[in-house]
Image (cartoon, rainbow over all chains, first blue to last red; front, top):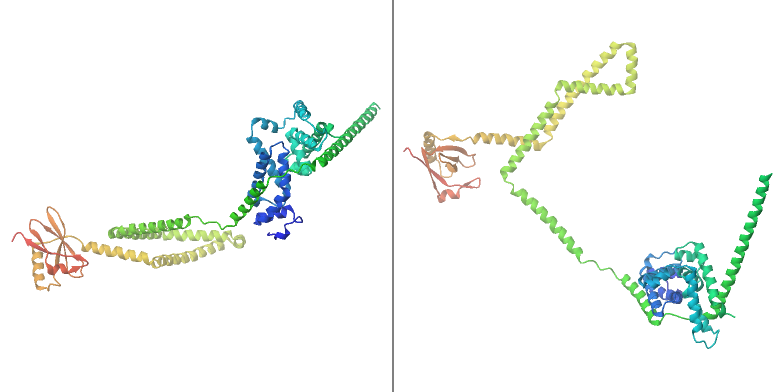
Length: 202
Length: 312
C-alpha cells in the first residue's frame, strides 16, 4: 500500500500509516511521529526520569518500532503497539539501572513505605521557596513529583490512562495484566494523588 | 418450622449483606468519580503550562533513521560472493569423480576383465541350469496341477458344482479331476519349455558369453605346451627355408626357466603354437634383424629367435 503525500493527513488512521511505512512509504512515518512523539516523550518524562534519559528511551522506542515495522499487523491498534514497545523499553532501562531504581520498579506496595515516601515529598515541596503559594508552576511540579512517587504499577496505569488516554482494557493489553488489577491500580493512584495534592487546590 | 425461621433469618441477613456491599461500591464509585474530576481539573490547569516535547535533534535523528531503514530495505539485495564459487566447486568435484571412476575402469587389465566376463558367463550358465534342474519335470506337473485344483476348488461356482456332483456321483468327480490335471500338466509342460527357450534366446549377452567361453576353451586347447623334438625342429627349419620371408614361421621367447625355454611359434594371422624346449638339447640366441622388426603380428614386436641344436 503506497499512500500519496497529500493523503498523509489527519484523516488517515495510524494503522494505515504504519502499514504504508512498512511497505516502504517513508513519509508515512513522519506523520506518525508527529502525531505521537509528544505522548511518548511525556510518558517517559512523567516516570520521574531526566529529560536526557527520556529522550534516549524515546529514541530507543522509535527505533524498535522502525525495526519491527514488517512484523506489525493491522489487527493491533497502533497506539497500543507503540506503548507496548515504550513500556518494554522502560522495563529494559530499569533492569540496566542501579538496584535502587530496580527496587522501586518491583512495585513495593507496602503502605508504610509509600506513606513515608509521600511525607518526604510534601516536605520537599513545602521547603522550596514559594513566591505564590498556589501558582500553576508549583502545581505542575507537585503533580509531577506526586506521580513520580507513585508505586510503579500505579504510575504506569495512571500515565497510560491520564496522559495517553488509553482505556482500562487497552492498558490491560499493554501491561499484560488482568483488567481488575488495572482498575484497582487506577483507583489507588487517584486516591494517592488526591491526598498528595489536596492542599494545592482551592 | 424452626428450619423455615432459620432460612428466613439467613435470607434477611444475606439481603442486608448485599445491601451493604452495594452501598460500599456506590461510595467507592462516587469517590473514584470525584477523584477523577479532581485530577482532570488539575490536569486542565497544568496542561497549558506543560508543553514538554522532545528536542529537534532527537526528531531529526529518529526521522533520518526511519528514512534510512526504508532506503536500505529498498536496495536490491547483493548476491553472495560464493554463489558462483560454490557452483564451480561442485562442477569440478563431479568431473573429478567421473574421471577417477573412468580411469580406474581403464586400468583394469584386459585379462582380468576377460576373467570377470567369463566368471559372469559361468555363473549365468549355472543359474540357468540350476533353474531348469530345480523342479523335476514330474514334480512340476503335480505342483501345477495341485495349485490349479486348489484355485478351482476355492472359486464358489466350481465348489457348488463339485458339491452337487459329489452328491450325484463321486466317480464322475474323480474322472473330471483326473482329466483336468492331465490337461494342465500338458499345458504347463509346454509353457515351461517355451519359457526356458525364450530365456536363452532373449539374452544375447548370455549367448555371447557362452560363445566366448567356448572360444576360450578352444584357445586353451591350442595353447597346450608341446615339447619340441629335434625332428620337429628340423622339419620347421626346412619348411621355413622354402617359404618367403613374409610367410616364414617366427619364434618368440615366452618364458625361460633353468631347465627349459617356452616359445611361441606363429605364422602371419594365425594363433601361436607354444613349445617347450629343453635346455639340454636347444640353445636360443635372440637376434634383432631389421627386416623382421618391421614385421609385426598382432601388434607384437618380434625378433628372430635363432634356435640351435646343441647336439649338432
